[in-house]
Amino acid sequence: MTTVETDPVGDWSYLHTRETGVADSPTAGARTTRGRIVLEDYSQGRPSLLDTGDSRTVVSGYGTSTAQQPQLLGAAQSLPGTRIDSSRTYQTATAASGRFAALARPYDSDDVVETRVVDLDSGRTVFTTTETVRALWGTTAWVMSGNATVVPVNLLTGQRG
Image 1 (spheres, rainbow, N blue to C red):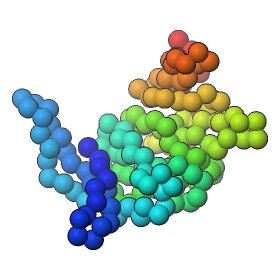
Image 2 (image 1 turned 90 degrees about the vertical axis):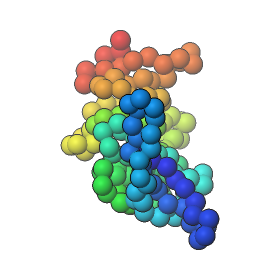
Image 3 (image 1 turned 120 degrees about the vertical axis):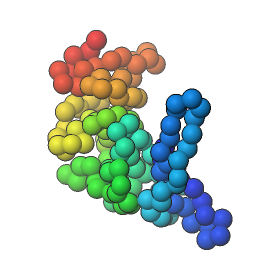
Image 4 (image 1 turned 90 degrees about the horizontal axis):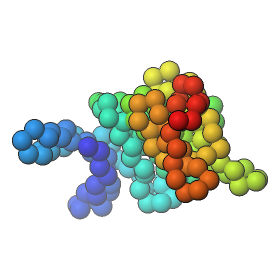
């Protein structure tokens, strides 16, 4: 579990992780500090945290500044992490699961947003859409359809199903 918590003494915010267990009753392990969050870098006041389910976390702001670009934190890595795709500017990360993260680019002049699903292991874009990716699970992206619902899309083939 990844959290942003404020230190009451210094009034600074830090990124923390805790191992969680679900056998018998839910448990939370010891807290590990992953680095200080500079809140001035995030226009919304806090970064978006998307755990991938394999001990990695995508940390993203909402904006186009360098500090707000989507970063990947490995299991034992501290902030700032590794920028996921430095060849493009993104607005935010919208979803992450396993080896994939959905990164939304800023709106263009026609109010269209491009979302790229990036393979976190290879850095390669595996799927691109002008629809919003709401969730990822395995090799399936759940994208918004025109009628306020989501439809599944296979990331490897692009086929809707």
